[in-house]
Amino acid sequence: MKSEKIIKPANGYLMFFIVLILFISGITLTIKTENPAYILISVLAFILALGFILVNPNSSKVLLFFGKYVGTVKQNGLYWANPLYKKKTISLRASNFDSERLKVNDKLGNPVMISTILVWRVTETYKAAFDVDNYENFVRVQTDAAVRKLASMYPYDNFADEGHEEDITLRSSVNEVSEALEKELEERLAIAGIEVLEARIGYLAYAQEIASAMLKRQQATAIVAARHKIVQGAVDMVDMALEELSKKEIVELDEERKAAMVSNLLVILCGDKEASPVVNAGTLNH
Image (cartoon, rainbow, N blue to C red; front, side, top):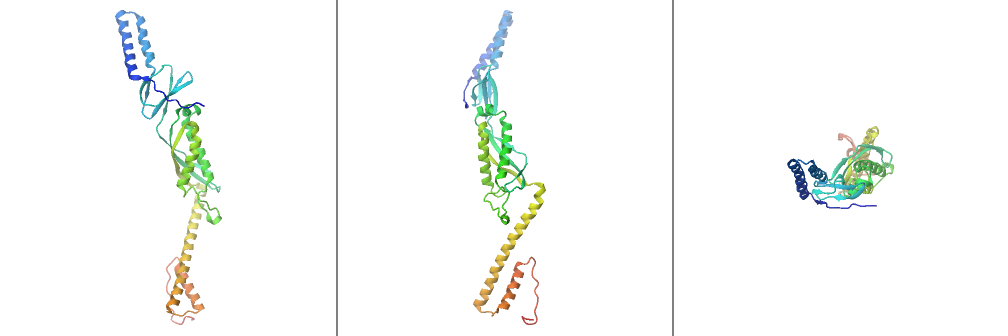
């Protein structure tokens, strides 16, 4: 397999003056001598002018001679080479690609909408020019394929209630998912001589048909988790209250009164609304 070959053609500024002198000389001699044969000098100058190569910053020119790869010019400036060389421009600038939103199934089979933002540039002009048909279209297709594969490797979110606990998820593990995406794209785009500068998830959401149901599920999970914390804290507070009352001997409570106190405190601490006090004008048992 061939690789990129960096070349530096002849100085284009010197050749520009030579071509200009030949062109003017041919016209001048033709007029003065009235001999049309001198016009061939101007024709030669015109043919030589086809060999000029202008390379802009962060750009390159791939040179071919009747289908044979000659080399790549990467240093910017004005050059001159064989007029029969075919020149192909390949940009070396960093490019952004924002993929379309794709509907794919995550690891748990849930349909999600996902897209990626890719920053890339060409580093091997030979591979970009000859190893793939169209390197820009190749980037688009391979990026979509990599995103589909990535989404199928991880769940959208954790579902501890069903036993599907994952260390890495698409929603919460941004850095890990981005690293996995970059690695996958580097392997796929290396054949085209393309370097991946950055790759990350640009958009992520459940598909429309299950978005409402999954939102309710997330809300229910959050409510259950909050209730668990509230109950756990309430039990600790009740235990502390009973312990302090017993330690300081403020009041002696039998098992029945302890049960009533625990019940009242749990209702107050775990309730959604503020408790309304009730004044008991009788005894504790009536």
